[in-house]
Image 1 (cartoon, rainbow, N blue to C red):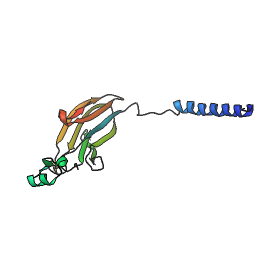
Image 2 (image 1 turned 90 degrees about the vertical axis):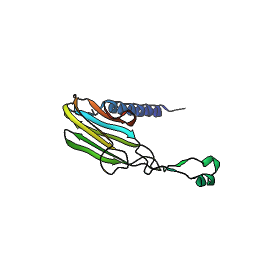
Image 3 (image 1 turned 180 degrees about the horizontal axis):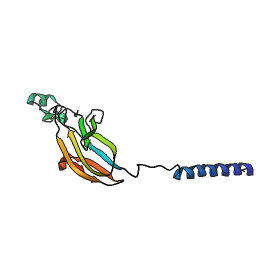
Image 4 (image 1 turned 120 degrees about the vertical axis):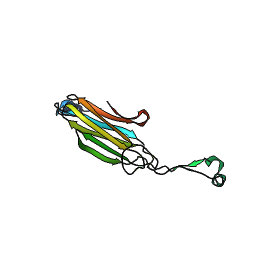
Length: 167
């Protein structure tokens, strides 16, 4: 049987715990973004080109492989890192190389960056290199955009639909 003192102490402990949880559910007040600003988000995942070209196996090489391992081409798993640049109003605000994910370096590179800006009209240019080229870019998009106060302006990338999209 539980003594009345233990019961009162347990009730006080639960009440104190509930009060702490209740306080932190509404306080201290947190402002995610200054209400007078807008936010540009660069957010996408994309796999770069393979680091090296696939090569066609010779008939002799195919014959040396077990039947379940025979395929016409040998393609290394690694991918090139992505080079991403973002300019807002002619000023370079972001430039980075993003390595591929995965243990073998054969997965997609992921980008998620946020840039607070003043609301209004902005000239936004974004560029991406996802190939083995040593200069230049494979995808580029530039446009004048109107960004409203407290708006989340998202820059996405989909190679299959032509490249960058402004959302």
